[in-house]
Length: 214
Image (cartoon, rainbow, N blue to C red; front, side, top):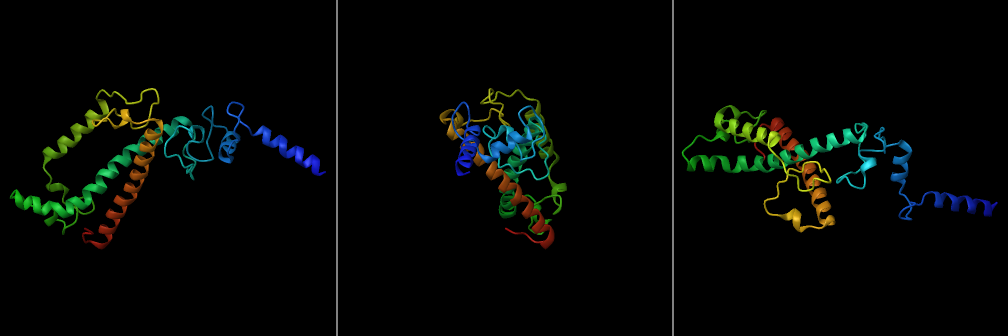
């Protein structure tokens, strides 16, 4: 009986070996194959099980099963990277607005927006945005339109990376190997996700307390 059990275990181990690399599959990979994801079928083990090896920041977290195919996963990743970048800008601007708006306005002999908001950063819940120049909003809209319709030369066109707008003025991408590039993508997503949580906390705290946090 012990011999039969040992032979069964050996057969299972051989069946789980990669015919190309000779390495055993992980439990997550085996589960992903059982769910069927190579041809764009539903991915129930988490976001991007089919693209786990090439998709940066994939932690298999998809409790609502939104990533039902590779196409949907790519769509959500593109949306996530955009929100990450906006959130990083917002999280950096929020404390700067509260700390520097009044000193800079006084230096330029201009009204400080934070005087209208009780020292809080101008925003939709805090108010103050109506006092911003229309030229500023026009410039923001123009930049957004150009970013959407302008010609883009991706840094890695063969990989079709989400968020690859070809923007690398300091040439970091070209100086990195594959591991360094993957680390850069992982770090951008990690910082962007943290920034989304941070800016949400800023807004909720000031909305509830009615006072500046910086």
